[in-house]
Each structure stands twice: as structure tokens, then as C-alpha cells.
Amino acid sequence: MNKKPTSENRKALPKFALTTLGSLLAGGALGFVIGLTKVFGLNVSALAAALSAALEAATPWGIPVTSVLTLGTCFFLYRFAAKKFAAWDGGDEDETSESIDAALSWVLLLSALQLLFNLFFLSAFCIYWMEKSIGALAVVGVFLLSCGFVMFTQQKTIDLERKMNPEKHGSVYDSKFQKKWLESCDESERRQIGEASRRAYMVTSRLCLGLWLALIILSMMLKISVLPTVVLLVVWGTMQVTYTLECIRLGKHSESL
Amino acid sequence: MAVILPARKGENQPLTKEKISLPLLTTILVSAILKLTRKIVNLTIYLVKRKEAPMPLYNRLKEHRARLGVNQQELGRLAGVSRQTISQIERGDYSPSVTLALKLAKLCGVQVEDIFTYQEDEHHE
Image (tube, rainbow over the protein chains, first blue to last red):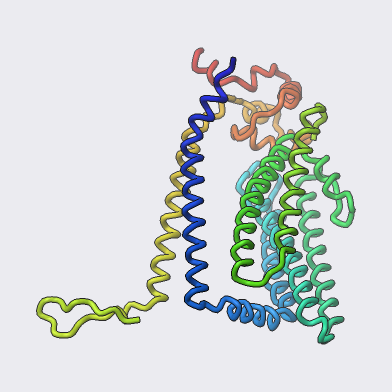
């Protein structure tokens, strides 16, 4: 009989027990602090109202301001990468190509973040300002314009990436862009994508757990419904189920990624 | 809130902590925590890297590529991989699959063992 799993379990058990005990103590301490805030009358509702008012005031300016900051940074990063690429003779200087790749990756990251900001501030506008019907068309127009700039930035970045790597295929305007791009990646790049995806999965799992804890605590202090928790668990569950099912599928067939 | 400390020897007035402001204390505390976290992370990374076995595959791809007179981009194009992959293989950051290793050997006109050697074999020779 293979005793290895049992001995490995025995080795890991003390650390697991200590972590569980530590979490219990931390949770107990946190609960005690929450109780104290209620006893000493810390006005969490007033704090939440103040934050809400600040967000309401910032919402109409959110998209333009964040667009200028992020897309402005993207512009300078892209220009840096384009200049380096123009000066690069396609030789074997790893540092040059790595710096170009890094700059373009940052452009893609910042543009993706800007898209999230756009969605956030549009949602905030719908919550705070819709009933007032002030400038709804203008905000939607700014939202669409910003999204257009994001797409344009990503398109220029992908085009430069394809100039550097002629074997790559795909256009950002194509709905199957991700599939086509992945198909044009070689084994090393697919391994990197796999590692990056695994890391994203691990980080997101921990984040979801932390967010769930935060929502539980907030629900004790403020009147938030169960909806945020449900949304979080749907996202978390989808991620877990998709990851596991995909592992099962990949384990069954020998098809390559 | 002022905290009254007992008077030191030779002093008439009790000291208070009002001079030490809360933002300053918070800043000092936060920067100390950040420094400590950075040290812990660096130590963890160092310990993890020490545990990782060094890449056992030794390769002479760069030499053969120089003999062919092609750059990484060209060799990548011929082998059907990206320039970065060729660069990573030459640096030892990536071990190619059997298929890719065979392709590269064929392009260089040599056997696979002439390009890629298992490092333990090198030590035994």
C-alpha cells in the first residue's frame, strides 16, 4: 500500500491546524473590534454616506480624468516602444526586445484597466445620476469615446507586436481574436500563458475569499443586501467550475492547447 | 489625546506626547511594515530559488546558429517558433519539446545530442 499520501498529510497537518487556529483567533479579534465599534458608537453609516457622496460627486468626471491619465501614459509607453522598435535591426539583443515587449504589455494592461474604470463610472452614474437626468447622453458619449480610444490603443499595440513577431495572427476587431492569437503562439508562449493563467486563478481565488470576508463584516455594520455576496460567489464558482472542468477535459484527450 | 509621562530627573514639567503627531506615527509604522514585508518576500523568493533545481539541459544552440549565420528571428521562422523562444532556449530558460529539439537539430544539420545535452551526463564525462 502506498503510505506516501498519509505521511504527507501528517507533515502538512500541523501547519494547517496552526493556520486554522490563527484564522479563528483573528476572526474572533475582528468580531470583538466590530462589537466595540457598535458599543462605542462609531458611526459607520455616516462614513459610508460620506464615501457615497464623494463617489457621486466624482462620477461625472471619472471617465475623462482616468482616460487622460491611463491613455496618456499608454501613449508615451507606446511611443517609447515604437521608437525602440524603429531603431532595432531585428538582431539578437534580448534587452531591446524585452523592453519593447514590457512596454507594450503595460500598454495593454493600462488600457484594460481603463475599460474597467469606464464600466465602473458608468454604473455609478446610472445609480447616482440617472434619476436626475443630468447629462446622461454626455456621459454615455464620453464612455463610448473612451472605449473607442481603448480599442484603438489596443489595436496599435497588437499591430506593433505583430510587426515584431510576424508569425502572430489576429485583429482586435475580430471576435475570435483570442483564439487566433493563441493558435499562433508557440509551445513556449503557450506555457507562459498557462503559467500566467494559473497564477491569475490562484490570486483570484484568494481575493474572492478575502472579499467574501469583507462583505460579511460590512453586512454587520451596514445594511447591504445579500446581492454582493451572491455576485461574488457566482464569479468565484464559475472560475472554479470552469478550471476544474477544463482540467478534466484536457486530462481525457491528448489534444494540444 | 495627550499622555502625561512622569517627569525626568532634573525636569520640572511633565512631558506630553502631543508633539508626536498621529500621521507621523502612522507613516513610520506603515513604512516599517512595508520594509519588513519586502524583506520577507525577498527572503521567500531567495529560499524558493535555492530549492529549485538548476535547469539540467545544456545546449549549444547559439554556436550552431552562429555557424549557420542566421539570427534568432530567422531561426525561429525556420523552426516555426518565435524569436523569444529561440532566445529562451539559448539562455537555458526553456527546455524545448522533443519535436522542437528534433526540428532544430535538423535545421542545424546535426544530431539532437550535438545541440542538447543532459547536464548530469556532462558531469559524468
